[in-house]
Length: 89
Length: 177
Image (tube, rainbow over all chains, first blue to last red; front, side):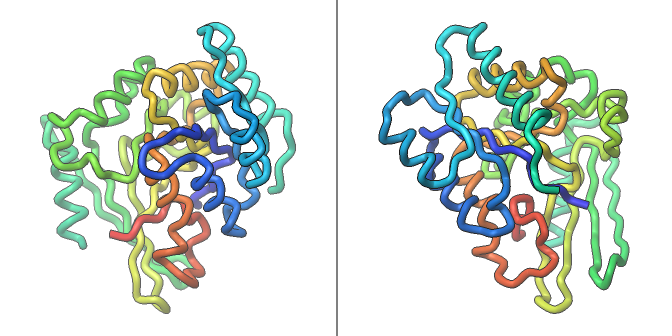
């Protein structure tokens, strides 16, 4: 009846609770654990990338600065994770 | 609780010439499900191509006095033709489901529409770009966007509020009222 999201696109720098905490919460609950989480962040910093993967991010995408590149990257992310990738039913 | 829900429905459709609020209920597998559905501001098909406009509309203090703390907003394309292609039901601008667990004697609210993508992005400009990019592959039809981590965290950790809720199969979209 009510579906889970198939994918979460998650920024890291967020007000109130940051993206890594959101990711931690999603991975901590067995019901939400299988959800594909793609980090979409501005940070190139390796510690952020490490932390995201250690917490179980499926992918980490640095937001391209240029408009065309940004749209292209996100379009590819959606295409891959929702159409190409096979997820558990 | 009902007063709260109905008041919300009234407030959200206050700008309509003719506000329509539907209240329904049914039994399903031992659970009682109530629904409240209003035709308030939000997701008119005429705004389908102006996602960002809707995005801003939903956050306008003018239209949503006192509702800035709502759990989320959906800058999704709800035009019937687009949704028909996905086999989705057109549920209108906003549809809540109330789930009542007889064992727990508790109520929760959930969004009825299926969601494919939860977008957590505080920068409205970047949110708009992401939605636009996803539309390239027609993937933005069932997108639910929240603007801060707390909203996402609340929606992904409803278990904190509702332990042992056997009916909460989709904890992200359940909010206690």
